Length: 399
Image 1: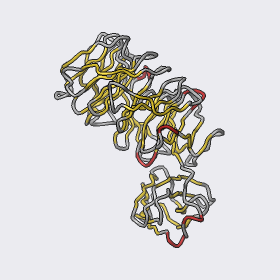
Image 2: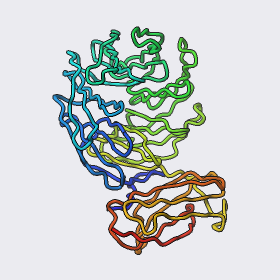
Image 3: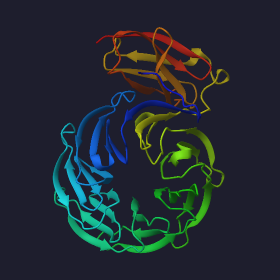
Image 4: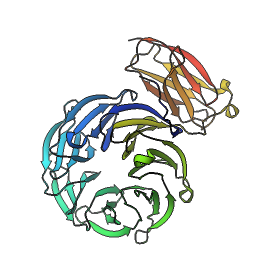
């Protein structure tokens, strides 16, 4: 149950957990993942122990749920042909609809900036709502986009509206009461998904891979990077110098080093079981991928991990607490370099139950926590080190 599984076709990526059932868009809030299930609505998963996600609540939608955004204790669920459902998640075990935004158009995408909700509503374009009254939002702007608006993404004062197999429209979101189209990005592919980060637009461009666009000058966006992924790039998320890409049926999860946009390097991948279409990044380096068949929880394990030549084990220092432990185990550690460290929990047979990569500290202090809710009482070992060797310390679990 607890072992990390390696795909038959993978590189530097391990699967640490899974949850059966379709996962079509999701939002992460603390240790809870809110995931859409097509026509079955939304379910809530407790990720306190990511190796064993537990469903704790659900709510049905009227039609196919298409996107989700969370603000405070409210989840906004867009629905095909029936507007937006407003759901209280104050009690995540019993999410409850408390209001609706009725729209005649099919709403395909949502984005929130501050207390403003943006909705991509098919033929009608973009609707903008003030969420000052979260259960009864006020419509403050409508902007027609031709051809149909498919999805949208807000970055700083810019909004990117995808139009599906056409160009991407850039609108100014500085004044949400008066959206103005100020630019366009033409790509050769589907232009499925856009993320803005550090004056760049990162585009999942369908069968045309991943593209990086310099948007320093909105009037003249310039492509500065391209990666030809093997599948159909549907979504991506940026974390530091890495892009995690949901790359469809033949691509699975791809990990790209984007530190040099003109020379994007693939540094990891995992061939998922189904069609990888949705991806987000969470705490502790975890990556969540929806592939139509299940929700997969992954971790990228960089190949520049600490090796024997980088440090002596005598320079590593770590303490375990509490000891004995119950529902979680924390490891306070100090390492001699900034290279990642591997922290593993193993049983007496040597079987790896959990394995987490954590950043090095250059003799500073770091703390990592392992969720052990489903772990039975018994004796275990914690190993801290690199790819080649590590320091072992015994620990006991009492339930």
